[in-house]
Amino acid sequence: MGFFDSFKSGAKDVFKGYDKVKLKEKITYDELYEIMKDETYSVGKPEITGSGLMRCIQFPAVDKYKIQIAITSKTITISKIYSGAGGLAKEIN
Picture 1 (spheres, rainbow, N blue to C red):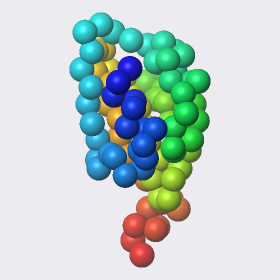
Picture 2: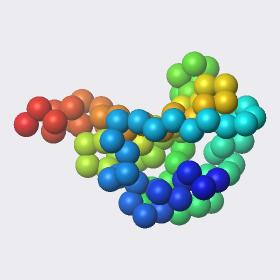
Picture 3: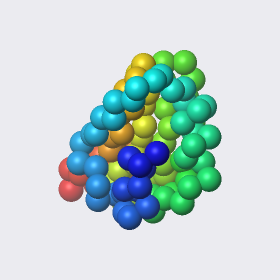
């Protein structure tokens, strides 16, 4: 999947806010994770977290942010979120 190539060249600087990718067919978290799991990314190794509506694929925190991937029907949303209270505290300072 070509849209993950940006991770290999330094994803922590690629996403400002979020990006959306529209697909032709629906994909599940398990299917997407199988595609992603053996690749090498500059932000670390992805993992599936949560359950039900709170399920997503996340990368380890880099600086004060972490990359989170959410799937809704045929849309994949890749966003940069604060890595907990520590990430938010770094933003305030």
